[in-house]
Image (cartoon, rainbow, N blue to C red; front, side, top):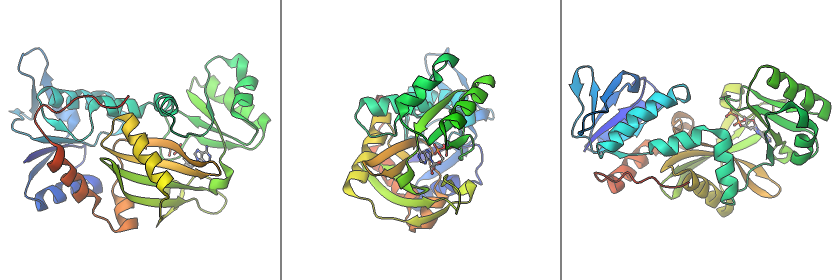
Length: 300
Ligand code: ADP
């Protein structure tokens, strides 16, 4: 099968591993920088052009679209979908998962456990908003943040109020969450492929830090999931409509709580921590599921 990988950088670990795994299994895989793809939407026969060529004959497309280029990246992916090319993750599902508020709303609607979360726009109701989330400490998160940047622990109610005021002053969108203390500065990354968790790792924050992000000095180790955790991760991916997802959860005293569902999970950390061939499993999933025109929107 001819497989297109949409990625800005062919040298990235995840991109390289997907290409390698596809070639090992006898496929022809090529990387295209989605920002260099261009399209003619008016024609009745949708096409994607790249460096003067028309991209044709692809059986599947693997989107690896960074958060900062979601808008254009998903437009390119949608064009492949209109051509009937099977997307590993659909454009609508990616857009859905990139919106933190929308994701949490969808997850809670489908009964997936999430930390108590509040968000507001007007400055008048900060007190009531905090009350609705519970007692301090609180976590205040910038909606646009990644890699743990913009996630702040407010130990007291006063501190939370000041933070909320500061974020508002900057016109930033944020949410307030209960602090899951018993998680002990750790979270669990579950790599979901289809209806299975194929690999999982625990990320532990360094001493004196509550954020477990590897970028914040956290360390990764292998972990065994409970059946309840597996079920929660698979359900979260399904609710978002993602075939492949990195689901982050916190171990709380009332069971697993989903924090985030990532549509382009990095493979380096999880393959290194678990020794598993996740890229190979993704290619196998494509082999089983890729059919021309099979781009029905799922989830939601
Ligand atoms: P980002 O998307 O920027 O990585 P996250 O929402 O994943 O931000 O938060 C970063 C880290 O902070 C998480 O990996 C987790 O360790 C910690 N964290 C986030 N939310 C909570 C919470 N409600 N309770 C306890 N720890 C949290």
